[in-house]
Image (cartoon, rainbow over all chains, first blue to last red; front, side):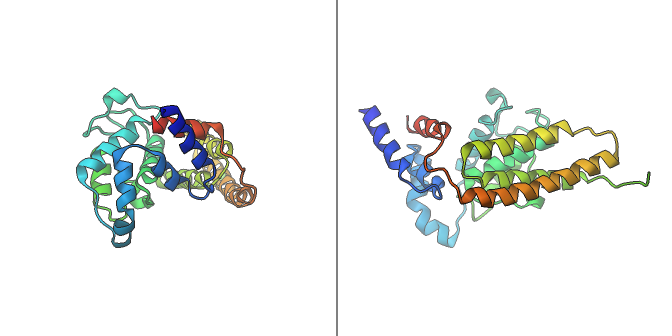
Length: 132
Length: 97
């Protein structure tokens, strides 16, 4: 049953043009957050709205936990990238890029430089109208 | 040798960011991942260069590679693979469970 569903979703995905992988990934995910985002995207995207801070924090933490060099157990909502997680400035650049991918907007260089901890990332993303 | 100014920290990180952004534009999984990995490896390799001249040379080389990557991203976009890499499909299946 689950396999059949997986197979159907997979086949549907294969026909999706390569130019729209983000939309396809959102459609395939069963994460409620992804579904909510998909349903509300038409109205929110046009006027630009702010994401809930708790939701942003959860997603930021999971992005950082998925980063190769990070020990998932060390990731807390207050962790500092360099002091607590042992990351260097290059890792920080890669993590900020991962945030861009997760939240679907571009973070300019001068803002990216200021993001050095989970807290500063959450604050910036939650205060950005284009984050989705 | 005349004093050559090496790139500042911000300039180096900005170049790294540009390379990662360009890497993301490749539609082919293998090339996209290779470009990202190659940029990250090169910056780590050159993180502690002995002098400003060496840093300036590495920075110039990086800028040249960025131009190559930008150009190739356009060329490769004309030859997008018809099917996705199995690595991308695996990620998709994991998301569904």
